[in-house]
Length: 234
Ligand SMILES: Nc1ncnc2c1ncn2[C@@H]1O[C@H](COP(=O)(O)OP(=O)(O)OP(=O)(O)O)[C@@H](O)[C@H]1O
Ligand SMILES: [Mg+2]
Image (cartoon, rainbow, N blue to C red; front, side):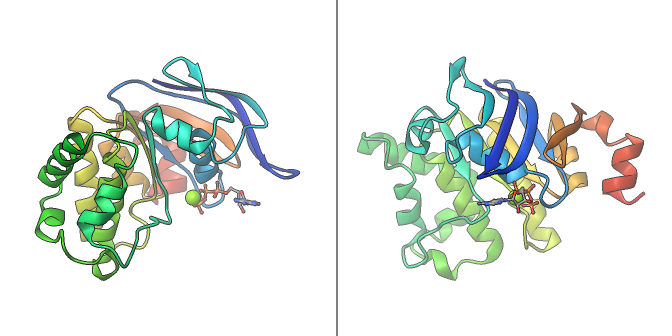
């Protein structure tokens, strides 16, 4: 579904990504892990159309999307849930969700998707009239993920949903991602919580200094000595 070949990306003269190659197959849940500043967010922004590649290719369902503007990439079925969340704090949960469906013209379809999203995130249904700005940290993450689903995406790019959350909320958010995958959505998840990420993903890539340092099935990476020493503290 997604194939990146030898991607180079830079901000001005500063090169951040060096020849990244990765792929995500339909229905897969893939992790992208690595330390601060490794280039994880830069990779997602490149896919989402927010940063034109310097070199290399990004293919979505066989079509080149490198350098395609973000609104077009989103219309093609790619949804990007950024670290910043970008919720409208003075609007209700329901209004925020419906804004996520702006590209879906059919009102009936919007409401059907809303009901589906509520079935995945019952807590959002209970709080549909609450202002987004008064939701707890974990609830806000869920709202951002749920809003990302409202455009009926085929591929979701989710950037560090666990950032700043207490451990029990991290579990909640990760469980909702797992539920999402079970509904058939393909997910590329960026995370610093290596253990939890390897526990829920099918495969993962380790990004270090803008290069893919390692890749493989998550269950194998969990046993890898380098991963254990550098990320799992064992
Ligand atoms: N707009 C920008 N202009 C210049 N440099 C940038 C910009 N955005 C990011 N960078 C730099 O690019 C590098 C990679 O950043 P990126 O945000 O992709 O890392 P990350 O792996 O997502 O890190 P983190 O885990 O901290 O979120 C960092 O050194 C960062 O300072
Ligand atoms: Mg980041």
